[in-house]
Image 1 (tube, helix red, strand yellow):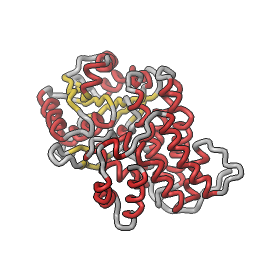
Image 2: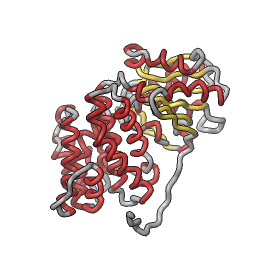
Image 3: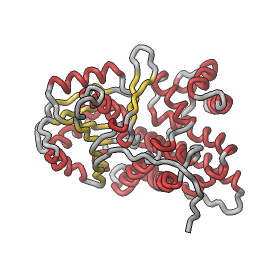
Length: 368
């Protein structure tokens, strides 16, 4: 029996009403819409899904009613200008529920639409149904990121009431997701789980879920990219994304996420790719600081630790993440996105406090 360290802490649950998961689970959409008496659902998605897949038709059929409207202008990193257009369209069509369809940008954009339609929650919130097609886990988050079109700086809002009310994890809906996008958002979920483990305020409940997430991703992410129609591997990754986010609101994230937020919006790098860039190197640095926590991660990855001391296990845990990124064909450098050496000090300052500046700069120099 595992020994639980004696700790004190706090865990916050978010007001998600229900999660439907499994192949074909989208068929429960009509039932949930009926339950809240929604007759005018409004879809928020991206142009690729709307124009190059049949997913909107699939979701409309599952809803059992005609959509009040569809906004397909959401772009990467959720530009504020497009969110304002979505708000106007939802108002114009008199939508009585919102359905986000896609990855983190449509889901986060819809959260902001909910907030604005409720006049900052002064009025009852319109119900948000999230149907994710990637592994970003934005559907389980109580925060929403958006980008100022002019400054290209990321901003955001955070409130427990932002989290979607209903979530559908249907692997069949994800088959058309580009392989690179599925893979890199899987690394994003791995980033959530890993940074929960070495958080300074880690806790047993979150540890259990995050470690299982890591195990599932190492067992299934490559399988699910090699064969997108293998539903068991696909669903396992969706479950892993769900588990990965269980502790973010209670134990927070770390340097990998902080760097990702800065470089993502400014250099227009997808969030999943930012994790591919930063995670393994941040883990190498954290392995020196928290070898016991990194050793737990290594074990969850499926590493054979026989003959390795704790420090070597910790470093091997970071190496295994880089190997997975390489196997997925997602290995990149900052310079691939136009980031120059002279940009690094500013990125490090914006991503860290004084106590972590040196570590941030060392990470950035290693991945340039």
